[in-house]
Length: 373
Ligand code: CO8
View 1 (cartoon, rainbow, N blue to C red):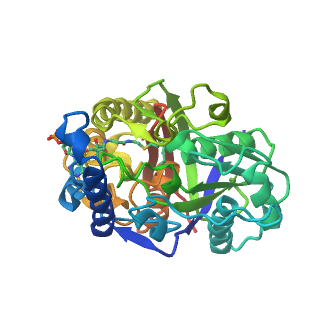
View 2: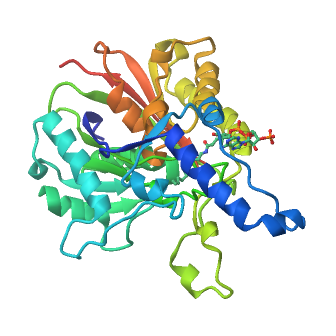
């Protein structure tokens, strides 16, 4: 069995961002218009008036202050409330592959490698722009990688489960160096007329180069990985090919992201903390061995609960950093984006944990240790 190392990571951030203030103004303009258009039905008690959203609620309930988006104009247009995406000819790189390639090139540059040094590409994200050919194969072609590529998806655990796949493929001798790419173009999946969730997601792409230990110095030794799932209907999207054949046809809202946020919070926090502590104990580590936790980035209050249960004490922000204020929830990419941005200050031998949790439910824990440069 070959051990594996995170050699480098890379990031692509869309150039434009939407503040809570701008998002709430657009949502509230939609609500005003909707309430005016339905005044008779509201007065007759047939429907309830929609309530406005609030910047204060969003920040307090989630820690989110802004989110990057592929097209803020389309999202903020109160008569449209969804990003505009220009169709591209089949010969051009698709939007999702382009985001992935940008993150992949950042990771390759940081490692001083080229695409030809990679012999496997996994594209893992909450949803794929198309079903086939695989986005991973398109990325493989665009960067000139060798070997194979495949797509996979495990909602918020997309990056960590893909990383675990890369470790297994390296251990089995099927590849020496695998590029794991998580392009999360989440803003088209959101229902911007839903007050409970219109603020949650943002767009980003993150990439990680996982290689067989011994190929180069530095990076992070992957000490142990664990994946866990447990079926739950509390976070769901019904988007899929069968929809167009259903009679009667579904409402479009049902194909977008829906969740029971409060229930998710209550069920996932203890579930994931227990999983982390059990995994840690099984590999002979203790909370005192953890310098930093790079947790899934869905909600700052959730992260505070999970981190305090794992550390068993109060902790400083730098011990469980967040990117929610700038990026919002970036689904499967969040924990890896957090790792990419906040992995400085480690001495060789110091350890940390990358851990995702989300829809499925799914959780992926990855214990790592800094290697000497
Ligand atoms: N503005 C003002 N008030 C609001 C708003 C708003 N926008 N929304 C709700 N309120 C009100 C409610 O009406 C309620 O009022 P009242 O008390 O009078 O009934 C009050 O605020 C409190 O509402 P909640 O109890 O719902 O608020 P919470 O404190 O629970 O916060 C959250 C809501 C932020 C959603 C929180 O529950 C949360 O973050 N939960 C966890 C969510 C989570 O982690 N989900 C994971 C999903 S991500 C994932 O797994 C990937 C899935 C696939 C990705 C798809 C990409 C698009």
